[in-house]
Amino acid sequence: MLKRTRQRNLFSAVTPSKIPDMVYKQLVSLITKGHLKPGEKLPSERAMALELGVSRQSIREAIYRATTAGLMEVRQGEGAFIISSFKGNLRQPLSIMLTEQAEKVFEFLEIRKLIEGWCAERASDAATPADLKKMQGVLKRMEKVKPAESAWEKADLDFHSFIAAATHNVLAMHVMEGLKDSFHTYFRVKKFNTRAERKDVLLGQHRAILEAIRQKDPRKARKKITEHLNYVEKMITEDIIGKR
Image (cartoon, rainbow, N blue to C red):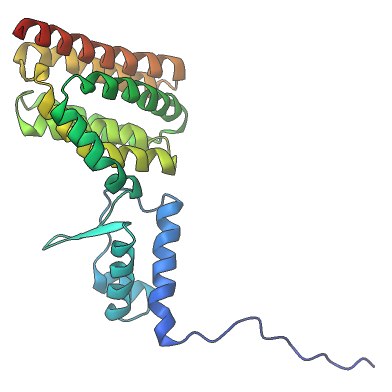
């Protein structure tokens, strides 16, 4: 009869001091796998502590570490939100260039055509009914406001962000999140869309993009978002020439 071999210890004991590290690693994993998306708010410390079976102090330490690493930000009175690691790296140089050299807006549009064209194409294949519902909801918001209002800017930005989210590609979502601050500067630099008579055209273009994605037509989706950005470029050019 063979002697029973001594069982190896596969696991090391988890000490209280390691709990925040384990929570932090879970947060990183959820972010990198796309389960926690840029802009998404974390549950409250209390809810997370109950779900994980740890103390609120451990949750607080893990969030602090994630904040220090640039993965999230804590907004006073609002909570903790996921951000993109691209955000801090891209914000300053792009925003400065767009502010100081207005003509750089055209270069920004060229990059948008490449990134968003791919996103629209991919979203036409990967978008879920929930993704489509979010985009439709944004269009309803845009119908109720004027292009000159800040609510239009937010809705427009949300629409393009939701397209990136509908790709279910984690890097695409983070790239778009990283560009958000530059989008705000871009909206301040360009003034064309404040004209009320252009609202119907812009809304129509956004509806066409959504419909192409809904139809699962990648070529059409890329074409429609490119046509929209070409229109934006044309209007900005006409406005610049008109001011000279």
